[in-house]
Image 1: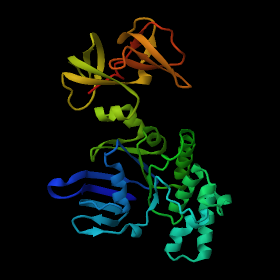
Image 2: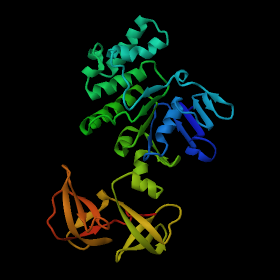
Image 3: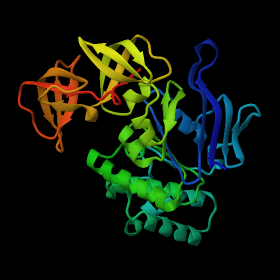
Image 4: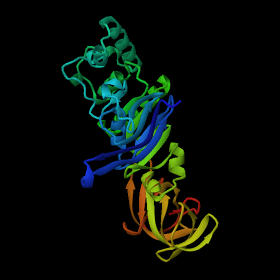
Amino acid sequence: MSDLSVKNLTLEYGSGATANPILKGVSMDLQRGEVVALLGPSGSGKTTLLRAVAGLESPKTGTIHLGERAIFDGAQGLEVPAEQRNLGLVFQSYALWPHKTVADNVGYGLKLRKMNSSDIAVKVKEVLGQLGLGHLGERFPHQLSGGQQQRVAIARALVYNPPVILLDEPLSNLDAKLREEARAFLRELIVRLRLSALMVTHDQGEAMAISDRILLLNNGVIEQQGTPQSMYETPDTLFTAEFMGSNNKLAVKVVERHGDYATVQTNGHTLKASLRGKQVATDATAIIRLEKVAISANRCDNSIEQELSTCMYLGDKWECLFGHAEHGIRAFSPTKLEPGKYWLQLPADKLWVY
């Protein structure tokens, strides 16, 4: 049985002619011990879906179940209040009480549930220890680093053993270096405690690193879902391919089709490419990841010759731009390249046409 099940959920703001649909029949399941990331651009509906599960937004139709327990049923007029859903929530802002100690912040939910003070102390000590915060119980939020505040917010969400923990962009307030460390900590914690977690993020790297499955939302519907590896390596649609990586995008004309492959033309060059998507028109779009482009000083199969425009140092590699920015091709190189013309090989199985 799923820990969380959402079926045909719709939600809109406003009513009548001015209604703005946000969720348009979304269905998803969260299995025990699974981490699902809700990924998508701004306005895609990912945060609204999380808030609907939390009870902070009111859907129009559909159902939401926690295990066998219905917490929303549009047809039956059932909507369980947020405070009765027993879900763990970690907000983007952490929302810690500034005048309460770490221990009091973590134990506040238990106090509201009328648990006696001695049991609260035991539970708080246990969860702070699990998150490496045992020595910080008497400090106040302003005495903590951003990473420590984030862990306090997670501890507060975990202390009453919720069936599902909801994470609303939990790492977005951290700087880039700390975010990398925090996502490793968060993934390790989730696996160790066998948590069921639903996480909203706009960062594809974060989604791939932490989650077992990604739901990519686009304009209120699920565009594609799958493991991080399948979403990155076998995108079904142009939207998914563009969203899940650093890409080159080429306007192409399909001149011949042969099975799963096609001969295409772009800016006077003829290439072989893979046909993707359900139907590919004659005028189409090709996508290739930057890391799949091979740079050569000599002519090679399925390649385009272009002048090097610039190289940008990224630390572990150089990102090189060939041609002009609008119609150019970007690729990675382990070293800085000398000025001149190069052949850019675009492997047919990695050049996807939609």
